[in-house]
Length: 274
Image (cartoon, rainbow, N blue to C red; front, top):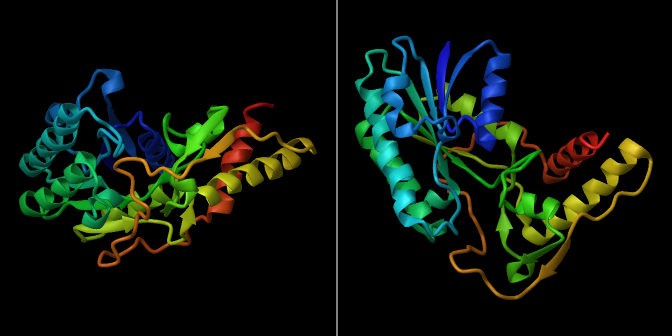
């Protein structure tokens, strides 16, 4: 089997590439970091390509570069769909959507582009499967994410006093969900840990996981990596609850709990210090 992953150098792309390679799958990476653009995917597609995992995108509801969001999330997505539709081998397209594509969760152009992609694919490439990802986290998190800030900044401002509710989904589960998406015949699926966790609970769970991991690794008490400043202000374009659209199926699996996922993150962090 031969696959292309756009955004192959990103947080999810690297994890998916590694998992597929371990299964004997040939992976062709396409990433801007390597001088390749997802919009040019047609020239990277061999005749015997089986699957395209399209993960490349501008991310975050707080991204204010609207022109770049349009180019990367709409124009590039249209090019990927067109390349798959015209390719003689008709590869299956699996693309990363977002919880923000669910209209009640949409607060920015980012979410609008993800919803656009879902509608566009259903019209122009009905065989494609979009996977709505929900607050993906794991070891070595992407810079700027909540987990990265909690592990790398001395002081983190947490808005709405940390009451915002999310479905934090561990990276290994997301990888398995994307592989599942290849084999299913559904236009849209959720890859989402059903467990509801507030941002405050998540921050405290990370602190507890670091203490637990420190004890497992060194027999001592771990240090708190950051101090959270919980403020009542609500951040613009933020949602108090990022809900799961229950009209869509959730990939069936035993999802990693927030406790277990953050413990894996913490163990990896301390293993890196040995």
